[in-house]
Amino acid sequence: MATKLMRAALRPLYEAGTNPHPGLLLQRGLAEHDDDPGIKAKHVERICRSTASDFYRRAYARWTQATADTTRFRSVNLKLKTRLFIGLTGGGMLETGCAISRPHGTPYIPGSSVKGVVAAHALERLDGTGDTFRELFGARPTEDRPDAMSGLIVFHDAWWAPGSAERPLVKEVVTTHHPAYYAEEGATPATDFDSPVPNAQVAAQGAFLFVVEGPTNWLDFAQRMLVSALTTSGAGAKTRAGYGLFATPEGSGAPPGPGRKWVVDTVAELTAKPGVQRDQALRGKALADAWSSIDDAMLKRAALAEIRARWQERGWWDNPQGGAARKAKAIYDAWPAGQEGAS
Figure 1 (tube, rainbow, N blue to C red):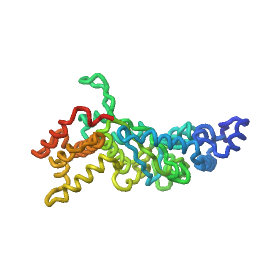
Figure 2 (figure 1 turned 135 degrees about the vertical axis):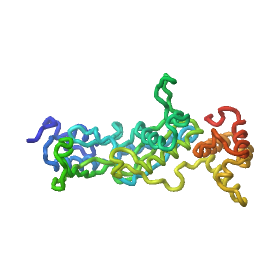
Figure 3 (figure 1 turned 90 degrees about the vertical axis):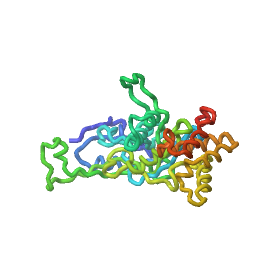
């Protein structure tokens, strides 16, 4: 027997909507609950027919302009290789969900989720109790440090990129092969004779714009970790099954900028000399001398931020090895304190 979920007076209003808010349909749009899976599947198909409005496109354009300052922000547009489940548990009686922006009606990835993905990825590569990890992600109170530490990097909500797919949402079918086993928490054994039950779910497709904010000298390093985490570990639910994986962007994961371009070009010039390897040029005194001769303060600051990020990535900044590296570090440290992080 079907369970009524909507007042009769509201049904015509929901049925007449031409492009209704998908979040509203997820939370309140199911008229009745029934054991027939076709009712849910039909409703999910209607949710996934929604398109991004002009209102959202204008808001997206304003957001990209607001985060264009490369001394404060880094942004990267990443396209999904597989479909994304984000906010699955928010669907109520529909038993599926998606993180939908309330003002705009488009999927998004909460900044807290982005930070969690990157932090978990970084734990595998950085010492979770070390200074670098604590500076980037913060730290909880401990006996030695009763006051919690706030992280330097802000991970903003990821916005769905208009035009990256025909529609932001797509119907995905997840099949439960042993329903009795899961429903009874293992009391009923799973067998090869169980009947699989197709279950319609709401997923996101296309691309998302990721933005991090913080001190200039940490931004490129934070973005490289973000790109690495999303392209190797993925985001959202069911990542172990292959969902939520993003494609590696064309070229480098780091965004183009004057500082990065200067470092790349200068290192290329140094490695053109016989016997000079890339790492040798990067940590050598010749690069530090070239950097020291830059007259443009903004370019000098951006180049130092790029050099520092690359050194930190290799563990050189706090522990330079070799005479050339120590001399180069002394040159970088001699610049007035705080200049590398100024905006």
